[in-house]
Length: 352
Image 1: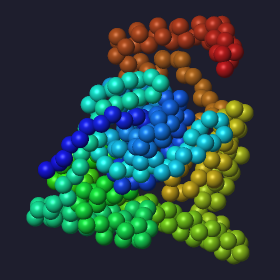
Image 2: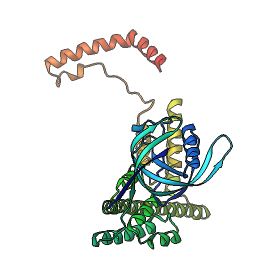
Image 3: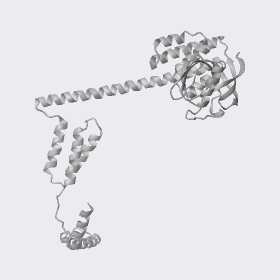
Image 4: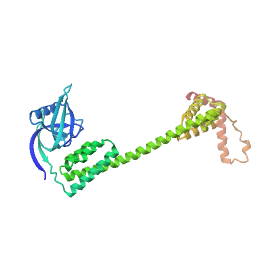
């Protein structure tokens, strides 16, 4: 059973960080209310309530902006830094739940309910403890974020509650996930939640590992292909030969020289040929550029045919109705060619 006690204590709201029991950490404090709370705690018994804000960007949190469950900590060391900031070394002792805010000025003073944990072991707690230790060892091997000596110092802890808090303090979790572990006062519920989080984290690490291996293999393949292509170019250069890409590019340039194309068309085709020359053959866009160049060079630039406007030869194969329509179109076309066509053509050239 959990033993409960109540007391009044200064409160230090934390931003973007959460402190578990048995955790030793440095905190930089700069807000006036927080500094006043530290000073009051130093005058009393050096104990202070540490509770995390729900929004780290809030400079003046109200009671509803602070998680109700936190950690009662002891101030081990206090150092004043330039600029009015105080660096404090604290050690988490046990859980506490805020029941009421006694005052908000000049510092937060709260009434809390303290929890003393029952470290008695049951078969269920023993099984959950072994599962948590096994999962934590696997997590350490996968993440490689914790040195082996730290792992040894954690797994030798015999108290299930303390073990759970130590493991949780070493995990890189969101504040919300850490808060659920801190709020789990019962040992069984806390161990179950920890095993659930460790299982999820290991799945994520396994996926990250697979992605990393796949990306590394792809990079190695790309680098190997690039290296072999460069070697092939060097060998062909020594032998006086040309690779397929160089021969293809030169062929496009020769075809461009043979064409008498407008200046803007020549410039555009030259740019596309340069892009094709610099592009890797493995890139899908190279096929699009190649098709585009073939289409541009195949167009009948500056090639004109004589218009046949005399339809007398078509008497035998044009039906009466289409013939009348065709004669009307032909008359309009002749008029355009006699006068209006030159105006239309000059206007169209100005638009270009």
